[in-house]
Length: 197
Length: 197
Picture (cartoon, one colour):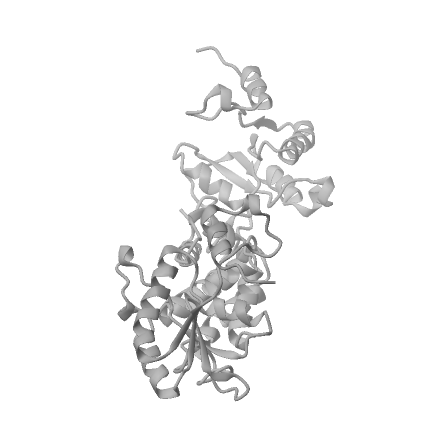
């Protein structure tokens, strides 16, 4: 029904996550109605990013130089490594401008339901790295989902026998959050994690 | 914070309509994690579509040949022209497999609120076309929004004095629709448009 090149564009856009057929069609028509420069700039950015970006061989974050800017920064403490699920978590943490350690990106969580075991994540690389760089503390900053908690527990059991201090980021009520909008599990964690003021 | 090529990709994706910064980041990380072939196929489809697709010089639908497949099809009645807002409306109507007339795509609706007058739409081209091709009936199939109705009224007043029959697609309850889930304005239109069975 569509000219072939429009259908191909819709198909390609529809392969992106969360982009259904209707949205793909809307995006395609937007691109066709805009000046060609916009389409070319988008296409260039896609190809260039995919060509220049790779995984850091130390922390497995995305980077365009290897090791990445954080792993090659002598001001960042190599003995303190925060373990996160995804590259976007690094960005979120960096926004605090306070954390001075380094990172390790797992690229997922252990999820028996989806058949994802530790061998599918960057866990072996973390074992090697901890030994090689004499990491003193692993701060597990996976999310607070079932899988995130299970992954944290797995890593604690893996690294504690190796003499590494394994910590977990605090779970509690978010800043600005009301208690009566907070679920029970979070309130319980917040109570358990209470500290003297 | 991101490597420059990732930031550029996020920026370009964020220029698409309905794609906010969070979604753009998610799409970028998806592309980076997938094989490079997927990024290349997407980029190729974007560039190729934008290069090969233009407006049909007769009906202003998107096409890769001019006139488009519908306008050059002698089996489609050139005396009956359905006026729609957008190319996607042509696709929707074609799905019925019943309509045998042709189309005219306005690329929008008259909207005084947004400063869009008939001169911003393909109305002058429709005036020329109606005269040139001796169009007998214009079926106005703009949407049933305020703007769609206003555009229909405007076109009726423009073309009726020229001896063209101007019709409007029916407004009523959708097929499979329940009356008690239908708003009053639609029910009123459905009642006004009642026909003997």
